[in-house]
Length: 114
Length: 110
Image (cartoon, rainbow over all chains, first blue to last red; front, side, top):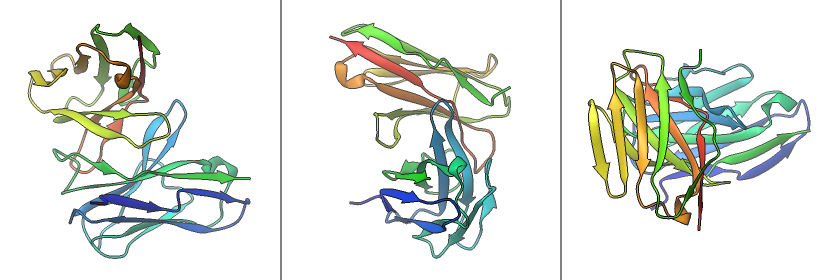
């Protein structure tokens, strides 16, 4: 009964390094999302995937790329990390578009860029 | 103007009292509204959703929606220390996107 699983839970990077955040869901959901959460700013959508094979930009996509590997997995890549990307990253999924379906969140990845 | 606005708090209420949280949104076409609870250091968890004008009750929680005023609220009755958390209002302005408010921090004092 895992729901949405994110790895890693914590990561420290140096400026300019790259890394990929992994997300997998076992609820057979069609739609998946990546958010970042910064103090006082709430959750901001980075990218989403409405269904397998599609991805779209959200509110703050610059500096990130995503891959919807299959129905279960949706990864977020930082090609050249910057201190401004220090944040908590949440992956979420929903049965279909966010319209009237609740989103279920993973436990988050706490990322620090030095 | 932010799409979703909430008072940041903190909102401090005594145990057993009613906590009232407010949220306003800018997109008049929004159709779905969600309340999430987030404990410190944890992920958001859904506690309520509402689609139609009026009230919706679930246990100690009541969501209220007024689309004409672009206003959604959450009432927590008989507040408990375990209700101490940040409450996020989320609004659906289009089919795939949720816009979140910055959250209201609630502290229930024993």
